[in-house]
Image (cartoon, rainbow, N blue to C red; front, top):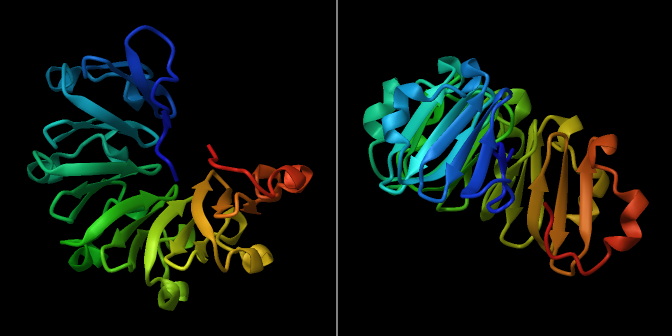
Length: 271
């Protein structure tokens, strides 16, 4: 699932280049690399404890339900907000001082990918904050991390995928383990993952109702898929011919039949 954010340049107000949000607070990155927060103090609006670290150099802010994580240009990460939702990173602080190249968040967990290919996790243990069960696979070779609401996935340099967190939301990928090879990208919805293989086919797992079951459109996902976008309960896949395939909860975007005639060709992006 994508982290909570508004795209670059879409935020109102002079000097603001990016806005992220929890359930009750906003965090804005300004053009000078500083961060401004507001809203519910318990949900990340109160950044006073780390204010000195947010005056410059912030390049990305990622959110869980109740906390923020700011990645800085020097490769360090600063967190604040609800401790149980990832705002307290003290247990892994020594691992977040440099070398971080990507941070993603789900409802309660943050995952940081380091330049050496290792992964650091913190936050809600059931949602993936505790990655000890797969820790031996996350020490090197990770090229992408992403999440559903309550699970996490790491794409490895050899094209395999490692998952952990809530089994029902994609943390358990054992049912498709034999298919998770030659993977080039992984995307999450609220409760499922969708992976694209090198040959353009798609593998899905997790909550059936939120896109984990793609059997109804399986014949359309055997080749040619170049990009997948996930929302709370559905996925949309763009194919090389410019067509779009959707699946998941029908009334939440999984059913595109009403506009199907407009999605047969010429689509270049989905947001």
